[in-house]
Image (cartoon, rainbow, N blue to C red; front, side, top):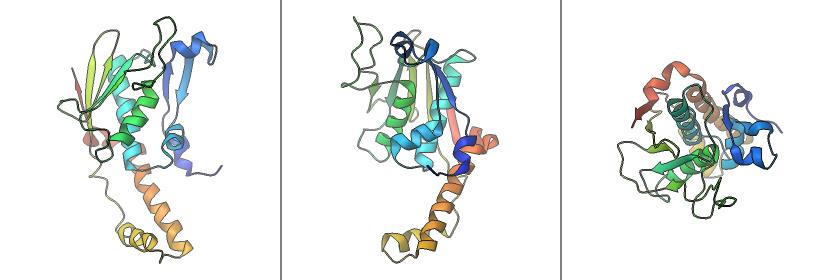
Length: 202
């Protein structure tokens, strides 16, 4: 499997998953989720997937500090509707990382370690996403705006040609490379995260 090298340079998210521990999937329930995992989940790498990953990364950091985030004990709330814009994509990525399921999620064992009903949409908030700990009710609300990291000016005409079936194979590859270059900047330019992410603890 070949993919852009920068995927491997994005810091992974380490969590503790009580369900995985109980069922023997991961020793002590400790697991890492990578940006590559989220790309596989989404089927693509783009600024939206990158932003969802960053919001989960920084949001869990704000909620848990130096402690391991408890996967399956985090409620994910989205300000917009699931079918609105890219909200569903963002919700899927963050929910995957947090181990949060919707109404069809895992219902637990004897009422414990359930993953269902941990995702909500159309929730009023001053931001895009709110992550809430189910054990302490602490929460953090996040917003993401990558506009300060602009796209290469060649991207738009190349995309137009590709969508119309007029681009050569070389032009298609160039478009993909330029697209991923912007994603790389978003994920690896840590000095800009304070400008593209807004984090408010509740």
